Length: 259
Image 1: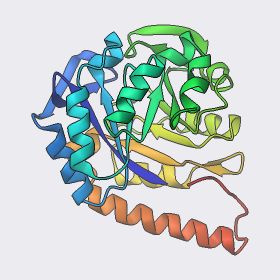
Image 2: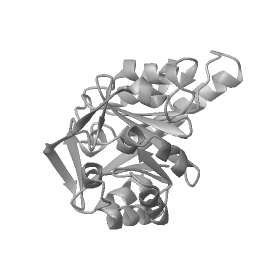
Image 3: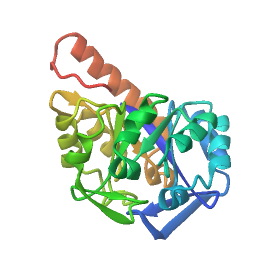
């Protein structure tokens, strides 16, 4: 299971929200690119970046900062926020983004996922309250269940699942939601929201449903608040993944997954 350290950008700064509430913001750094460099130096092999301004407005407000993050990190960057057209996705690809995450547009224009997937890697972003998908920076209800939206985008090469009620709380992930997602799709699943401890991460790495494992986990506040040491977590997850792979190779538990 890959660990994606998260960088949420708002107004050019590195911030975190609590349960997606723009009125409850904590600012962590004025230099998101510097944060990206520090994550890469700790051993991160991927980063997850969200433009919170773009998520609300659909405008790529912090595109300059995103390009700086990509350049500073030197590792593949997955990006979400305001990807609502082929043109926006192309601009992000030009900025060096390795994979875009589409949330709102996947509900409002389902064919867009296929259009972008034909040109560049794309993930389906499911931001969920309970089991209903939220849109426009989590500010509005999408009126559709996560299972319904999940089935609408088979072209995506990953699905990023965020339980809004746990995001930024450090209170632990929604394991039931993640298990339901694993069982409902063959697309690799990346978990987001709620990780507060190393034990939470290990629980995600051990999660199995439908004979599958999580492909990755996004962690933000726990790294900034130092309840999870990034370098330690990366090392332990690498060891855990190697152990699971050895067991599968030996026919130990017979459970697969794209981790």
